[in-house]
Length: 185
Ligand code: CTP
Ligand code: MG
Image (tube, rainbow, N blue to C red; front, side, top):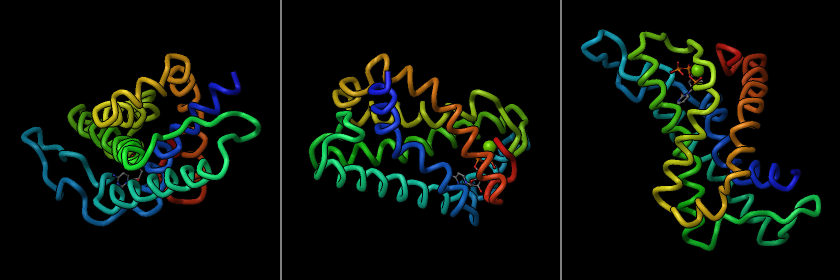
């Protein structure tokens, strides 16, 4: 149980960080350039910016590199064997895909939220908590299919799906109180 949970968290760390760092460092020019579609609504909205995308990817990858550094010295944590991102240079691609994919997942959901007429920041329960997991998984599967299937086994993936919403909700509440998020979701 604990081992599966720890494996899930360790593998997902580079995907967990991007959204919160995007909230901290984001802002400025929106990715959609302020454009609207025929439905009169923004393509993505002001909540998806270049700065957020870049800062989120960089921070997610930095954490992944720190994890790789840790694993180069020690292969366990709390006595539990850690999963690896693979050998270089493939590992770099994996952590990039986890970080960038998480942000892609989040911004593609913003696209659908705008089409549904939901304003920036409007909550979409379930989707808000898991869109970035799906994005991270899809991109990682595309760039490293065998690494993905070897590491995200059924139970590890299940642990991610069960634990992520809890983590997401709690970090967003923290983000709300420290003032980097406008809404607590
Ligand atoms: N952010 C950003 N760029 C991104 C993702 C997020 O700048 N690619 C920043 C924005 O300041 C955003 C905040 O992080 O407001 C929180 O992200 P999120 O909750 O995903 O955005 P929302 O403002 O809720 O917008 P949406 O309704 O589109 O999800
Ligand atoms: Mg939101």
